[in-house]
Image 1 (cartoon, helix red, strand yellow):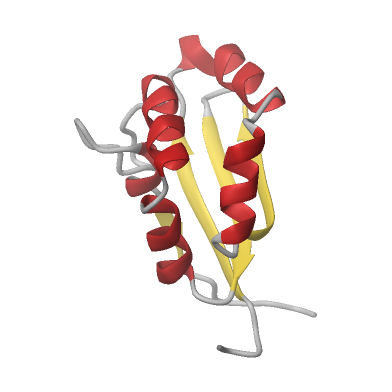
Image 2 (cartoon, rainbow, N blue to C red; image 1 turned 90 degrees about the horizontal axis):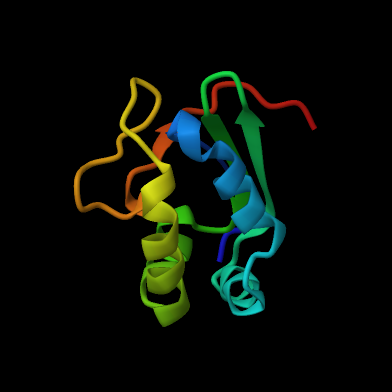
Length: 117
């Protein structure tokens, strides 16, 4: 396992008419979803919102993002969560939401080019 954490930042875009519902859903994230994220290696995970246009910025740290994504994809709780979240998102220049794709499969990952400890 690597000694350093991989920093991951990604974008998604909410439907403007569903922002409040999306925020309400995140006020009560299912405990089993939180446990699955932790077990899969997601650390220091935050979501940020630009409410004017629904831009969501996600940030997390993990030892191996591909492995952390695969671990989540293998869980039943993630399948249920993604199905419940799909109605909130839309395609935009900032995200890659595709028809019939789960939101977690549509993130637009940003390239890190600078970091200051």
